[in-house]
Length: 179
Image (cartoon, rainbow, N blue to C red):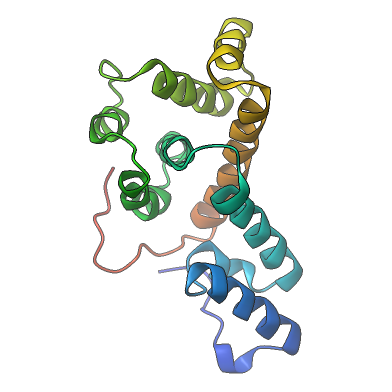
């Protein structure tokens, strides 16, 4: 159970109502970390806006984006994020073999691009830096702008994971609780 009680829609202040509607327009509902964030409407709105950028306007392909999100979820231990993004990853074209490699943390069957994306995200979580050799490999494989977006996406999903984990956001009903 989430550590904070859900906010009821009928108890919203006008500013919260406006942000609630905006989040519902792009996500279908206010749930998960956004249900927690709604306590501070300006923060919820800005976080949702950055999330919208990564879903709609990013240079990253959908498959690259979702592979990075799954890697972040796996690294930080956010089962909620994994559960919410595994289906999206499949829908966006992430190879099932890549998802299973990441689930099992065995990277034998990955393409060069998949491996670079996973290694960048892992490096940021594990050492907070990108070693020069990996940086050079990523620049060659992804280019400057996609690398910048990948690093930014990783930071965004780290922040979302902190909200999920700190406030013990409940798993969506009827979902598997394991990686």
